[in-house]
Length: 197
Image (cartoon, rainbow, N blue to C red; front, side):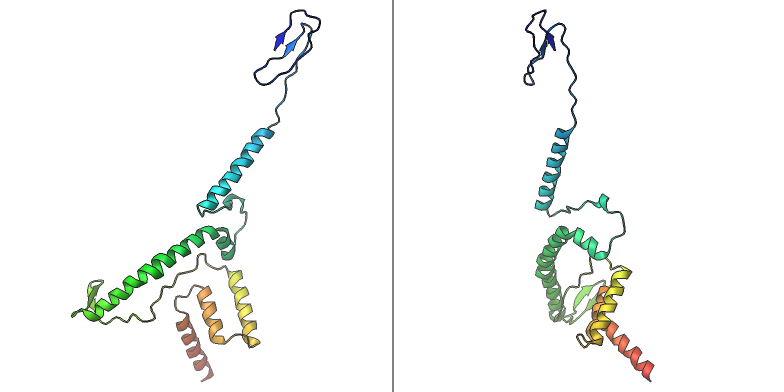
């Protein structure tokens, strides 16, 4: 701020960032207050850039610190959806397209080699490789409320003839984390037969 040294026409002038305020000797200047709107605009711009970069990297765009309560398995899966999509593509490329081919090749070797194939310190021979597949577990375990809702829905579908009991048992066994849904159905059939006898 500069004073004009007694000139009578010394009105206050405000220029750009490089200019100074000129005032008459009896003039007065006030401090201008900055309210922080510019900083808020920069932060909003940063958030938008973060969203774009995370989308390009297939990252998680959700904010974990905003979650205040326990989330269901399905909600957690939806929150991590981009990462799950990426992993599913990798499972298809390297699982069905790579790992299964190696497994089938090992099974063929066990049939061709005279003494069989050494796996885990012992020789195995004639491993079957038909109907071989990979079974991936669920991303997040289902909560009790989700399992209850699924069980009630399956019971309603079976009661109204929309779904067979076997399919319902296999669906529930898969959702509850069982690695052998077919075995679960067989055990249930055995249990029902022993109850009726």
